[in-house]
Image 1 (cartoon, one colour):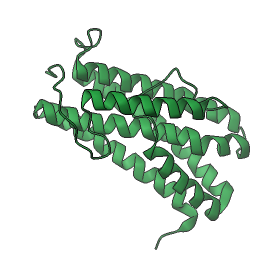
Image 2 (cartoon, rainbow, N blue to C red; image 1 turned 45 degrees about the vertical axis):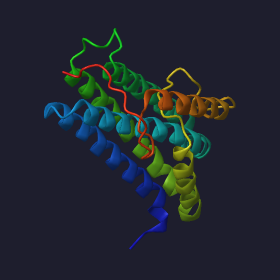
Image 3 (cartoon, rainbow, N blue to C red; image 1 turned 90 degrees about the vertical axis):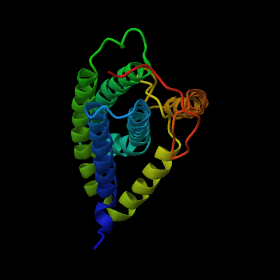
Length: 207
């Protein structure tokens, strides 16, 4: 039976499982030498979801965590630091995927393992914060936060922006700007976003 009190925690848990599965699918696709198209689409699906997820978490979860939790300000800062590390790893993965000169020589396994590490670190920090927020705010507010999280994720940037503000007065403006800019560049690059398949553009070889 669905427990309303845990709806926020369940929402985060579901997102974490999907991210884990998506990243595992990337590793499997590379290991099994699937087609370049398949590898690109699976990697892009993971990167887009990861970027949207952390952006939405910063927008929806962190203000409550900072305000309501003991040591909330410090916990939020630690989370943002890990978000930036994750976003830098996503940027590295994207450079490697699309053949940027400074990343093309990196072994794909090294890029994937670094991404796996940063994702695991982020999920551990995030899960602890969300569990405490869910316990503090109660089922009704937790349900509202879960719905806001889903709505925010759908409209969040699809690319990493580690140097942009993640909280504070300028963060919403930054997210709005980058969401629009990312939509443009996704169309240019032919990325698959939210199930809409655009024209495919083959990147650099992944071997």
